[in-house]
Length: 304
Image 1 (cartoon, helix red, strand yellow):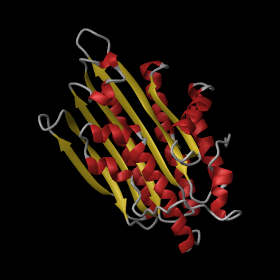
Image 2 (cartoon, helix red, strand yellow):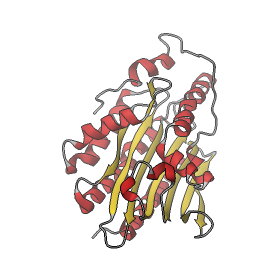
Image 3 (tube, helix red, strand yellow):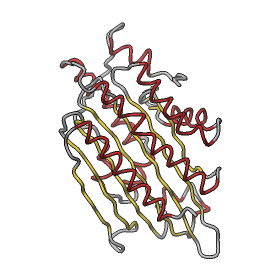
């Protein structure tokens, strides 16, 4: 029987495996920051482990965070959309990561898997899983996008043929900057409030997504990390990273929930890129490699 304890054990193991794989590529160790918020200091109690690498050989910044928090009532902003959770004690746990490589030809990637359960004496618990992964290149390579999307498809294949098309579209729709009218990257998969397969199989599906991240992303990092680049590419990378910041601070549900509920700011914002630029009304030169990102990659496609 799946329990929060089993989910937590899996998530801690996943965090350790992903960090180990990334350390092999980068050659530098991740800093381990274990934190705790005791009951009574805030409406939300719990703790977590933030593992972060800054100024690595390959990763300019990379963070892999585990958190497990709980409370007697949801923050008002979250409870407003879920009236069935009123009066329930809840707990949430997950692993969330973002990788920002130094080389502009190596893509940024994000992955998250999480579990939520709310309980009330005498009633059945309300629970769901969420998560996904997505890819954000600065200089696009078709073979990279194909590999990433095919690995996402493989992660979901054992659980139903309908899941990948649904979760791919969900990702395309979710990671869309409405104020810019453009996608954040080439997408991947995204799901939330998922319980359709029952507790055991829904947990198995979430595990499969988490387990496939290493296969989806590490080969791309190894393939692009030593590509020669110059100041032009770094400048464009910093400009495009601005879109990442805009999405995370304006639209991302996880970031907003964490900040509005008094979460641990350092852990929430470790997803931010270290070097970013904005320009007023800038457009790439037509026909340039930078323009190709917009014309060939920042449009939803059936990459798999």
